[in-house]
Image 1 (cartoon, rainbow, N blue to C red):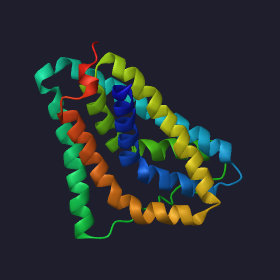
Image 2: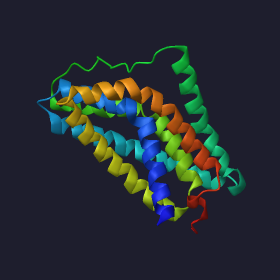
Image 3: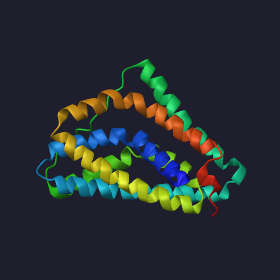
Image 4: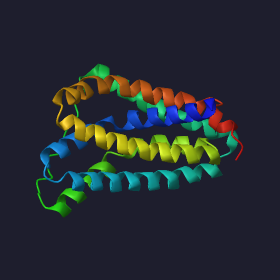
Length: 201
């Protein structure tokens, strides 16, 4: 039970750490296209499903890496976290919203959401690929449902925050400070000899 909670906790942390920027973009899209919430939601889910498919495909390549070296994949999210901290101290970060999607047709909105998720999903793909490659098969069956549960949570949170602007303000103000430490934590988890590595495959 403890191992299950650890894996779920790390997956949730990894998702939050790599998707806070996408959450803010999603809030913007819900706000801009408030007449088409289901189209925005559908585009978001399709985009995240594509990211998940790419992640699994890249993670499968981890099977060709010797077991003794798999944990070194944790260096990647750790370096991403350190780089985010460095940028944070250099200058104040703000989330830039892409204003190039001005179309109001259902198809344009749907494709815009998919494009946004894919263009901002590199950190998610990198982090989850490392996590997926480092974990054993039973753990993968926990990581995947937790990932998609978080997709649903973020969609609900984004839609809710449109009607509660103060929540969006908190996300923008404090999210950039939390993200680097989450990525470093996830990287440390992968580097460590963790519960997901001990579950027999």
